[in-house]
Image 1 (cartoon, rainbow, N blue to C red):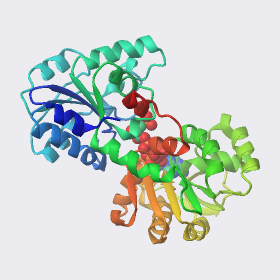
Image 2 (image 1 turned 90 degrees about the vertical axis):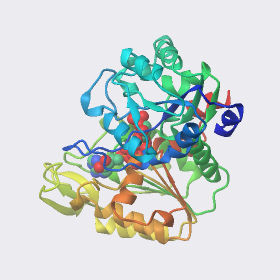
Image 3 (image 1 turned 135 degrees about the horizontal axis):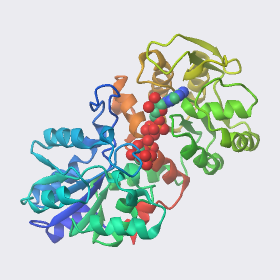
Image 4 (image 1 turned 180 degrees about the vertical axis):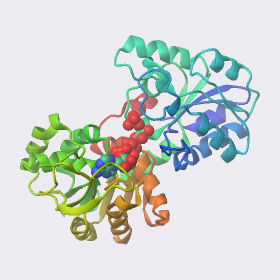
Length: 397
Ligand SMILES: Nc1ncnc2c1ncn2[C@@H]1O[C@H](COP(=O)(O)OP(=O)(O)O)[C@@H](O)[C@H]1O
Ligand SMILES: O=C(OP(=O)(O)O)[C@H](O)COP(=O)(O)O
């Protein structure tokens, strides 16, 4: 896989370089402010090197999951502002992705300047399953660069135009972040030191359930909390009230549990609330006793103790997905407890995922007490699964 140094060695001064970044940062639902800028900081080494080398840097990214059309709540404009502060240079923001504003913004770039295009997912072509539709959008994007750098590790598992199709159209290299992520994560794909414990939570339930099947044979223990656990609890015959549930995956989860040979550890207690709100009334209840009008927003203290015991034995730990809605202090204890347990092991520990990494920082945990904090959750899980990831394969071609 060619990397940024190869491109820099060819010389990029005065050349337009299209950089796919993962600037999908968490935003405050009320104020729209960026609550964690870790993913922006993570691409600074690549962007800084290109700026210094005098390239005209055209950055593109997705933010959230808009439905193929402009949606102001998912605008990258606040990210352009923050990126400019971190680079200590103006970032020229295009109000569309491949339209007139983008063309004018890119055309006006001087050497060493940076532009950010509006959210890629405001365009249907970005995520389309139709090769022709995706290809047509990739053609438009590729026109903005003479070379392409993929530094969007968090999105390399997506077969999307900017990740999978643009590199087929331009000379392409891996950015510094992608290179480092792959280097570190490859330590977990060979023969990880055992016991190897994986902790899964978060809210992207259907995406990540698909990964469990492939991971099960590789791990010694799989601890499941967060929004993930309720589909499993349901499969065990428990009622889960109004908790996050993937009804159509209940049977799959039942099959997984019966084949897991006791490797899967589920919550024994959960914090159940009246509503998805910071001030909602809530209680800790047994996992098999969630009242019908309540929803589970965190794992309970007994579960944290059980997970801590399993983690204390581990020699390798991978964690993706918060154990609860950590953004609300009343439901942050499970995530804090599990994160602290991970920092106390003498295992090689990796945390992956935009929100998981944000949780580590929001809870004031020492980032250096983890072996690696990855910017990708789904991406690192699928990498660990041993799958060929569309974004990596495209860089290797
Ligand atoms: N029990 C739960 N119910 C609903 N949402 C949850 C629950 N537990 C965790 N979450 C939410 O999951 C989100 C993170 O999920 P995800 O995107 O899968 O993680 P990551 O970005 O680390 O890969 C957080 O915003 C958190 O509030
Ligand atoms: O946030 C992301 O992934 P993650 O939550 O698995 O870390 C990436 O930006 C990918 O986003 P997507 O899962 O909407 O494709």
